[in-house]
Length: 372
Ligand SMILES: [Zn+2]
Ligand SMILES: [Zn+2]
Image (tube, rainbow, N blue to C red; front, side, top):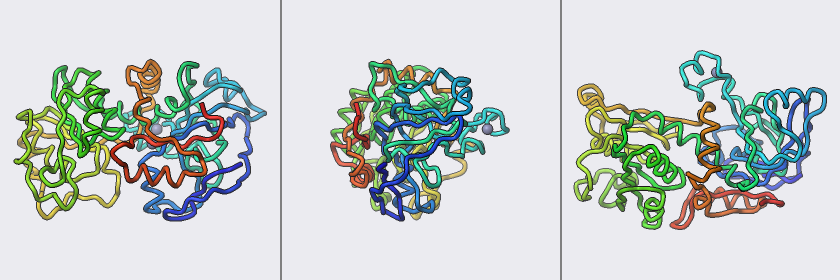
């Protein structure tokens, strides 16, 4: 089969590899689409894990084979059968360990194991024609209703990560929440926060995204630019204040930083009311730290003002059914978030676009022939 193999930093190659062989109780899924996720981009561009690997973990496709011998492993978890259209989750927590009992699923040892592969060290495998789904991630397999597309199924995993983060916020109906950055993730935040009864102030550098933010339920939108504002400002603009921007609100109850900008964090901490929360969602690079030449965090902000600086990473398995209902009912309509679909052989271009978004790009997907 054809697969896009990661061979080193920024080196993705279309290769021919064997179709994965199944052990008892495993599934072979013919991939239809796979979303390009920032966490994979980070690994590809920074070489944080050794090659070779086949990335891609926001995968949807069709079950074409079930490993013989112990198919009760499959049926025990669900009524999965050959021909089912499914969305996959590449990791699933044990729900039983110390971390899981604290609801810190992303820290669970079982969760850290990737259970889907197209070959080599398991890494999701979605950038290939077929993937092998191991028994321990079968609880993460979700059937896609006939009326929904594979692409909608492939969005379950990112939507889950966003809903998990929304649940980390202590919100009352009517609370004002800043969402900094209106890329596909920021737009999902805007919509899910609106559904939770919050009033959302959406900011971005791009007017096109603010228009979409309105459609996704933002009450206010604010165009910021890297010169006058630091809300989604770039590093070089960090020493400029925010004072030049007219804020529609004195203070917000919470802020979600859906863009990897340190300046946005500092600013959000200043803008959040006492007792409010600032949630980091895009600061996934290990080398980020909060020492900065022009900004620093007064620890009294945390103590005296009781502002919480929190983070959220990855998905919450216990929200899976709710996420499926939100997406498949289209209360959160993810279709308009998908702006580009590249064929498998152009995966490198898909990754490049997702890494350097344009005014018109949002979620980028790789599709494998026989897509819907
Ligand atoms: Zn992802
Ligand atoms: Zn666990």
